[in-house]
Amino acid sequence: MKNKEIKILLAAPRGFCAGVDRAIEIVKKSIKKFGAPVYVRHEIVHNKHVVDNLKKIGAIFVEKLDEIKDKTRPVIFSAHGVPKSVPEEAKNLNIEYIDATCPLVSKVHKEAEKLYKNNYHILLIGHFNHPEVIGTMGQLPKDSIDLIEKVEDANSYVKKNDKKISYITQTTLSVDDTKNIVKVLKNKFPEIKEPIKEDICYATTNRQAAVKKIAKECEMFFIIGSRNSSNSLRLVEVAQQAGCKQSELIHTESKVPIEKIINCSTIGISSGASAPEVLVKNFINQIKKEVDVDIKEVEIIKENIIFKTPGKLN
Image 1 (tube, rainbow, N blue to C red):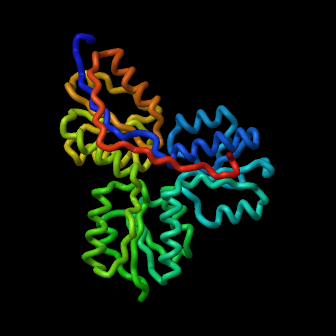
Image 2 (cartoon, helix red, strand yellow; image 1 turned 30 degrees about the vertical axis):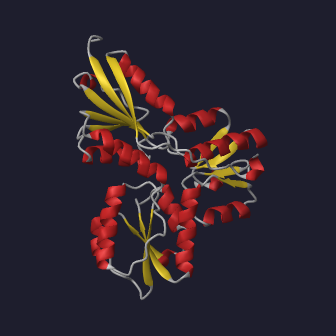
Image 3 (spheres, rainbow, N blue to C red; image 1 turned 30 degrees about the horizontal axis):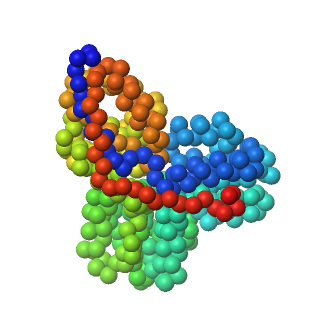
């Protein structure tokens, strides 16, 4: 069907953020410095392509430290952050560790600790069981922090003590959904303390804004990312809410829905913060086999943030 041309609107920024770049670089530099294997606790970032490539050069992924067979090898903590108990466990097991937690997640951890020391009870807006949420909640005693997942949770929340109340958020949430939750909390608790600076990170905010800008013009929207990637799943929702109802996630096992695509005149494409650009290119190349394409990149802002890797790896 090569006589048909489809317009592709490519959202920018998209793909890797500074925290993901840094985490991947930490694994590569650790293998270079210590030799293979190097252990990584949890997927370094939520993307199968990235994880598989790191396995090929000597990374071994585990979910718990007691899965590490050779305790003389170093372990890297993923970009999502870990509870305080994890580095303590590593010290007890005499395992050297390198922390690849995204600096913007670490900022939320420090914020939580400061609030706790200042006698605040903390509400964390986030997704249950996401590694970042587990890590942030694990910075504090259990009874000092509660999870708020949705507007209904905010509406039904009852204060558990006489402490002042505050909120922090996961870094990869939907900007709009979070605003709605915060609005309810502020109405309910006018005195609630909010973060000095937004906790949702620059990359999440930029990628959502870029998708929102072009979604209305598209008949279908595709987000390249993994099923367990919070920020990728949020991008699908953002595209739907912004006017493109036919929005879907393209993950490793997805088949390119060519039959649907060839019936469109304009489609949109973006990718989650843990998805490499090669996956976007592969997806477009699959489409190019069937139809001609006119690609237009729509960039809303330039990103030039870089996070340094730990000094001991340089």
